[in-house]
Length: 270
Image 1: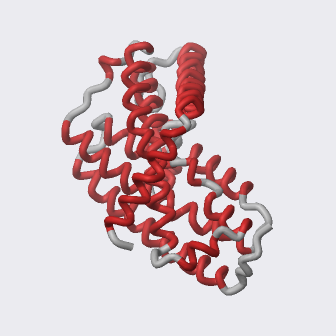
Image 2: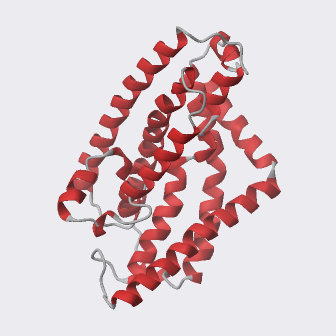
């Protein structure tokens, strides 16, 4: 696939996503608000009930800042609009036209995912600018050019990693009647082990050491801590190397599942 075609697909998907403006903003505001404010009240209750000033090495304002960063940045990494597109092509026979295109199917789907992520830039910036002062934690955000730059690179890699991880799960649609349960399981596991529902700092030391080598960490915990300046370049570089290593692993896994599934694909659809 040529870079020009890739960018054209990204642009087309972004314009399509922006075309449904009312639905676009309602889903965004409701989704962000529920996730952020539920987490805010939950941690407020935990701190008040425990009477502790520090939990997982963070004060309550610092925990709120981490939650905000994990929720907003996690949107870039996960990109849930992508879920179901590959399995849908397989179930409905829509894969036929892609097999005839003079372009790589994986490249086309990744470009479509990136296009759907473009509106998130606007959403996250506007919502972040609103909610941070509202929760009274603006003083806890101490961003620097270096931390922001490293976080942007981490988000790009985490987005690619999520795509490559989801791809083989979606490709099981060649055999399974429904892959929805696999996607839900992957999402739940990622939320727990990736630092979304609970920061990894609250886990026991032995378990946290193991979690730092698993791929889900790079969806929430890693980019959030990089953005907040808790991870410096010396820790960021090997972290990126590990994330890219996981990308290679899931790329080979996805290719194996895909090639095997194509042998029995009939293209009839449901």
